[in-house]
Amino acid sequence: MTLTDIAIQNLRRRKGKTAFLLLTFILVIGITVTLNTLAKGMQDNLQKSLTQYGANVEITPKSEHFTLSYGGLSIPGVNYEIKSLNNNILAKIKTSTNLMINGIAPKIIGSAVSVSNHFLVIGVDFPSELKMKPWWHIQGRQPADGEVIIGSNLARQGNLVVGSTLELNHQTYPVVGVMQETGGSEDNGVFTNFDTSRAITGIDSWSMIELNTSDPDKTTVSLAKLLPEANVAEVSQLVQGTKESVDRFSNFSLIVSSLLGIIGVLIVFVTTTGNINDRIAELGILRAIGFRRRHILSILIQEISLVSLSGGVLGFFLGLLTPTLLGPIAFQKAVTFQLHPLMALLSIGASVLIGIVSIVLPARRAILLDPLAALSYI
Amino acid sequence: MSLIRVCEATKTYRGGDGVVEALKNVNLEIAEGEFLALMGPSGSGKSTLLSILGGLNPPTSGKLIIDDIDVYALAPERLADFRHEYVGFVFQQYQLIPYLTALENVMLPLAISSRPGKEQREMALAVLDKVGLTSKSLRLPSQLSGGEQNRVAIARAIVNQPAIIFADEPTGSLDSKTAVELLELFQALNRDGLTIIMVTHNKENLEWVSRTVYIRDGVLASMPQET
Image (cartoon, rainbow over all chains, first blue to last red; front, side, top):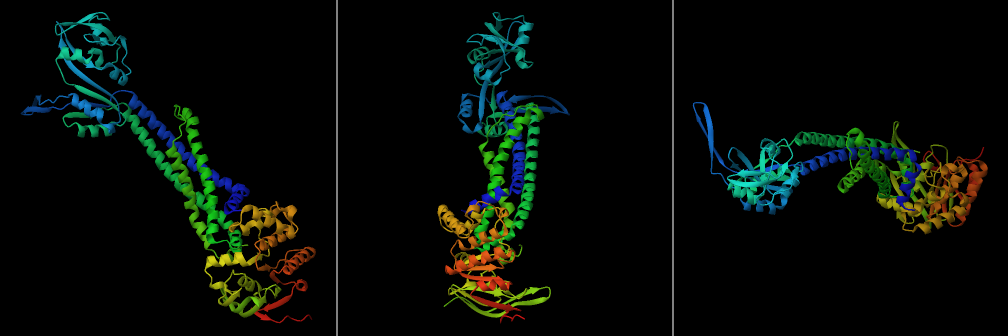
């Protein structure tokens, strides 16, 4: 027989009190984990949206702008000292390991003329571009050297189809694809690869570099320091509103979790104080037969540790399962079951800590009581 | 040679009516192997004296020497060790731990020893056999009669092979037949060399003991004559 056996037997045979304490821990930890799992699920979904779709950081050449004004009348100014984005910039971005970049899409953007029209010519790397913009659907194929694809408006206005030719700066280029309507500026563009766009526009540096990153805020700040010769801007996304909602929900979860922690400590404190008061005489007997104070403390701590640990583990799994089961009903969204080791460690650790903190005062009182005084409770 | 020596022990309590002197300059020597009865009317100080003798209640002044150890000069945790090693208690209401079986209750004093579990179990079963309760070793206290609970309490008191047993009104809540069985058990243990000090108010119990100490108003006195 050990002190642990005494603690276990007490918990086993005082089923009602043990069950109440266990339930308290399960609910406190369960609700906390549920809220945090939901918040994390929402953050993950948002992050997935951010990383899957579109560019969220844009790099453009830096230029100084000069505004002309006279008598309150402003006239369009001029750009001067336009700096170019060369290959060194691209190399710098690619070799920076702390930027969390998922995709890089540099572009050469210029113009070309035909007999009657001006055209916007965009040179891209199609594999990178299509990865970042999965809504681009090309009827036909991607262009090789000396070939182009055109936006849907352009095709409609010029009656151009796959197989037609397009005259740009006195050269004829076969149209090998037509991009389906996107509702954006792509609908009026002529797309080709880098070599052909350089040949058409005569531009040798990058006009713009679009990036997709997991953390646009941080990446923008880092890149602004890394590339002083360029303008780095975060592209506002529609998900910004969602992000704010998710942030609000995360803060709400944190506040509720903290409140639950405090309420948990109070409930467990009141319950354990009551339990220990009921057992003062019993602890007096143990002291009378030679148990040291540390023996009594060890029994009390082992009891609360066993209950809080079990409650923490059960509460954690309840907290993980609840969003999976209730997510589709409450949020019209499936929440996938994911085991988060850090969350497990924190929630179970918090449960044990709540237990230990709650028992400190009543346990101290119990062990400081002299045996005869404790026996007088009989 | 005395096993226990009480020297000029005084105990005072502060209560609502001021200071109460429960014991007044008590001197007492108890030899090893005695079966001593502490007798006296209610409120005479016999239970106070027993608790002082048992290392549970330090006297306001005076000394308790057991086996040449100045008991109340020990630090609190050493005093607990002393009780564990030298003393076994049988309380008036048995005071078994309600959620432990008879066997587990008997094993309690061994739980803080370094003895392995198997040895603890064997020792506990041996003393349960001695008090005639082997067959009920797995019952909870609530499933035992008063006499059986008393026997478990005695088994718990002797399992650690202490030098002295202190019993506070052990027959107080037993019928006469069970009380006799209990006193016979105490006598058998005493014959095995155990020193037993028993508080009782029942004169019928005195025929089982080797010496009686009478206490009245906190002082040792001579036994009153039957009228």
